[in-house]
Length: 386
Ligand SMILES: Cc1cc2nc3c(=O)[nH]c(=O)nc-3n(C[C@H](O)[C@H](O)[C@H](O)COP(=O)(O)OP(=O)(O)OC[C@H]3O[C@@H](n4cnc5c(N)ncnc54)[C@H](O)[C@@H]3O)c2cc1C
Image (cartoon, rainbow, N blue to C red; front, side, top):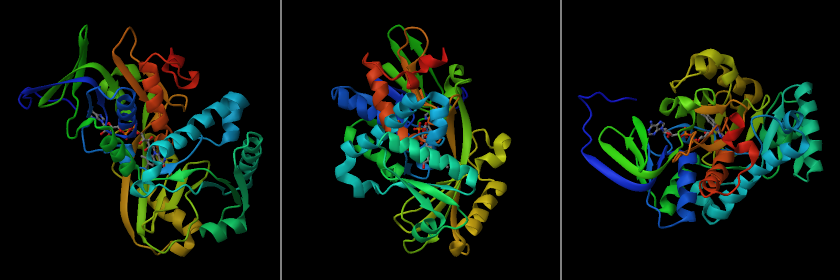
């Protein structure tokens, strides 16, 4: 967003050591780890809406390991060792969440009971079997299921089989993000949309409609919205819409959250009993790309059909909520941390490619490593784009 001369009145200037633009999980994670690194730092998180207004407050809350594809495809793409390194990075994300907030699990609705990946045809089941074999070779706990197991444990039909990642978890993503802010003592500025920033020799100046922020260092954590702040990101991150619907609550009927159809579709039962169904972004590739979070008939119909086909017991449940959210997909499917070209004071992270809850807490920590001159893994360094 830009502000006209007539509407702009910057009457106030605030000074900070570090400002973070973006109050989603990646911005709040970075602020959290920065404050942990040096409690004396004065840190501001500047957010255009409320906390977790973007994808972070609009997702399904799966805390899954891995990336946007089945592990066997990660191995084909990167080789076994690197695929494991990528996997391990997300496993460590979960371990870090438990380390920092494990004593407050109930407050953030954190449950670690695994997640399922279900195959609706034999081709996908072949890939899941291969995935299970590869994962076992790394001692990653995984269970293979048949059609009957799935019906019994998940009340789901028309899947030929699946696998269970035993160590995955689920969470309320808004409560988790709020917890990071509350427990770190950073200053959070909701409803402050950044119009632009300028980097000078003595620091960075950030402009919102009514407030100017001055700081020594800036972190850009707006993920899908990064290209709106700098054209540097035009070829690195792509806005992609995801949609969800939620039904009225019912008694507990599912063991744990599930992915289906090559991780494109997903469903889970929330602790409140509501069923959440999401996915089908593949149906509207062209029109779904952009920054509008409106829902569309074609995808909402597909989500309802999914219930009819795979969760037929629940097909008559009332749908009580529908929404969309904008994700940032990186050009190679992996996250990135870096600084702007030159000897810049502007750092960034992003590219969570539909897996920010499973990746961003660790990525924020890695960005703090980069800021403090410590090494970060090659596969998350933005240098790979140079
Ligand atoms: C429907 C859906 C389902 C998903 N399901 C899962 C899941 O189950 N598990 C999982 O791991 N991931 C999931 N994801 C992906 C996950 O939500 C994202 O990867 C993650 O939230 C990214 O976090 P972020 O903080 O980087 O971005 P965001 O949460 O988008 O945060 C960016 C923030 O920047 C703010 N902002 C943007 N521009 C400005 C500006 N100019 N000034 C100030 N503030 C600005 C935005 O308002 C926003 O709050 C899903 C996403 C969607 C949409």
